[in-house]
Image 1 (cartoon, rainbow, N blue to C red):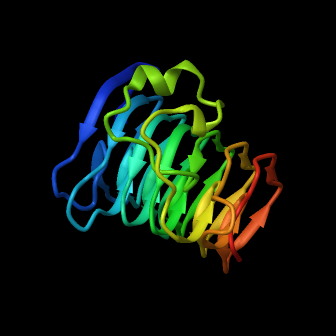
Image 2 (image 1 turned 135 degrees about the horizontal axis):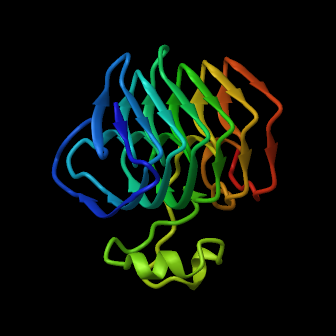
Amino acid sequence: TFDGKGHSIVGLEIRNSVSPAGLFGVLQEGAVVKSLNVLGKVMPSGESNMVGGIAGENHGQIRNCTFTGMVYGSSDVGGIAGVNGVSGSIQNCRVSGDIQGSLRTGGVIGHNRGIVENSKNDASVNMAKVDPQISMEDINLDISMDVTQWTGIRFTDAASDTGGIAGYSSGVIHECSNAGTVGYSHIGYNLGGIAGRSSGYIASCDNTGEVYGRK
């Protein structure tokens, strides 16, 4: 159990070739991370699969946590966790900033097989690619501002399975909300305010973010 007691870890930066990647690489079944705020950049090089702000891969519990910053990867990319396993649960978490990936990318979780509930995403998801040298101060000035106001932007490549909460979910998403912009006009496949693609259960969720894509 890692109890942050409401404190913050500021300046997390992961750029090495590591997978899964996050503040915690893997949380195994029975592990608990709670009451923690993380601000930073998770941008691993190499294959960059299973990338998350709190955990790359979660099979335990992540509760009452926030992540503010940038999470960039290839597949299974999320603001809180890249992959949430069958035994994994994410509760009362919140994400702000910018999330980018090519396959199964979500504001909270990239690939959800477990439970995600009472969580909110304010981050942009696959909206644009931002200069990795942009400062945390620029992100923190106004998380809700139009990303086109930032410097060093280039449009994202086509991505699939992109959602405000989860990129792809075969598990449960309950009482979650998304306010972040998802996708870019005429680019990308399988996009949604809550989930880009789902074979699971979604209930009592709401989306107020704009959703763009090709299909």
